Length: 139
Image (cartoon, rainbow, N blue to C red):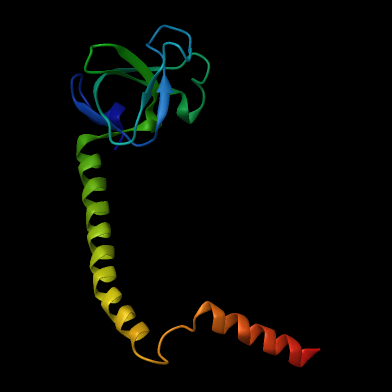
């Protein structure tokens, strides 16, 4: 999963967290920065240790290139390899498909329960009426 250990220059890497960065070598500025989004494919170039954060686990910076050939640097923790990204994408597609399948099987049952008299959850008015009655009985 570590792009530094597993990628060669030119390999595809993918963002797993939104972030903004200015081109490498320029101080950060909202005027020059670019916003990178989860799932965005970029091109790995190289890596280096950050001069300020170098002694911390997130001190390794990945050098990457955008389609317009601009080079940026960002923390290694923002990226995964193409193989890892494909696995993440596959996992969430399966989770979504499973959730949709459950929803599609539950919705018809819920609709039929609501349509039959006396079945399902009571309406809001019935719930309010019950609350009022129980409150009156306590007083």
